[in-house]
Amino acid sequence: MDKNQALVPWFRRGDIGGITYLVTNNIVNYLIVIATLSGVLKWPDKIVFGAVIPGMSIGLMLGCFYYAFMARRLSKKEGRADVTALPSGVSTPAMFVFLYGVIMPLHYALGDPEMAWSAGVAACFIGGFVEFCGGIIGPWLKKRIPRAALLGTVAGIGFIWMATQGVFDILGDPMIGLPVLFVAALGLFGGYMFPKQVPPLVIAIVGGIVYALCLGRIQPDFSGIGFYIPNPINSIEHLIDGFAIVAPYLTIIIPVEIYNFIETLDNVEASNAAGDNYNVREAQFADGICTMLSALCGGVIPNTVWLGHAGLKKSEAGIGYSVISGAILGATGIFGLFTFLNSVVPPAVCAITFLWCAVVMVAQAFKDNDKKHYAAIAVAMVPPVADYMYTQITGALSLANLQTAMQASGFNEYDAEITQMIKDAGVMWNGVPATKSGAIIIGILLGTMVTFVIDKRLDKVAITALVGFVLSCFGFIHSASLGFYPSSQFAIAYLLIAILAFIFHGGRKSWFKAVEDFEYV
Image (cartoon, rainbow, N blue to C red; front, side, top):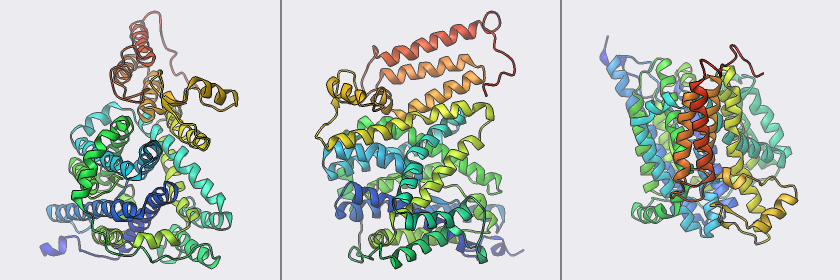
């Protein structure tokens, strides 16, 4: 056989579907970033379209190119032409956590979009470094963090931030949102396909835009089209300034990036199961490096390996889809085409994709875990809700010029008088500031402990509680800032759990026996 014939071709018919998948979904993510930064936070265009979007585009483009290179090399090594490149994209869960858990609180606290952007750039760079480190410690962590705890926490983020906002945006404009949702649901949840295997999601998005244009709901805007090459020197200056600002948010950044590199690990392993034997560590290193380069160019959202490799392989996509998608997305950011896209895609249409992503995240948490661990998933889902409630309540009260501040409790919350007024009004506020601080880690800790209780491993519950004790002592959880807090009530409480768990574990063969085959539901 001719050696060249055994190599995956640069383009084949299946790449058309891959391009549709990668470009459409990434563009929707970009539009969510633009809608949040420009529409909600009112950041100036010079930051959003002159730095954030081009920076993200460069990181994503490099990721797509590198994964195509990995696929070509794998094809050459194994002498196979049926290799499919890993799908690369903006990390949707990390995007929502960064936007709503880091950038939005900083924006309202600082009142300065440029400073908030500096912090976002620093957060993205730190996230990229954590992703890079995932190539070293990821497999070790994956063996020790129960999947129920990890996926449950992420499902909580998806449900409270993505699903709710998606449904609200759809119902906020029902004339567009509901018909578009129905068409998209035919493919996303029903498995229907249009002729030539065209996915209903693509028809829903494109058709929704045309439909909105016919209704006069959108007005194309070409004013932002131009040439935007990021200035790394300027971004590096803001990166340095942002490190000090973003330090208190490490409790949010680090755990979501731990999820991010474990997601990469899972997705690469899924590609291995589908027949393409990619190196997990290399993919994680690539994600981290591309994310850090994106931050150096002004980006604020990390990259990851996406789900969907098995589907792309089934549709016979190769490497051309990755190269072409990377070029399209890179050019779209550099030439300012997202200003045009932002003006022609209504929020109700964007909402379809992140509602779908949220549903997949919640469903995956339960599908990929044993039924007995459902309780752990449910518990892990709750702490991220505190982030949502905190943002909504503080945002509403800011209209009355009521602001949170560091209190003696160690949380950013209101003084005792205002706090009591909030509670007296029936608002669920008790414990919200405490849970909001490090919510993702708290979700993982609680989910992990419940998992080990179900598995009757109280010794591991004790070890997990000791981790909670250490994290509380240093302010990674239940604290508005890092420091040393050995007398924290939370630290003491975790220590008490550890002591009790060790005692109960010691009596497991005598006075504290578990019921065999116990089911809680």
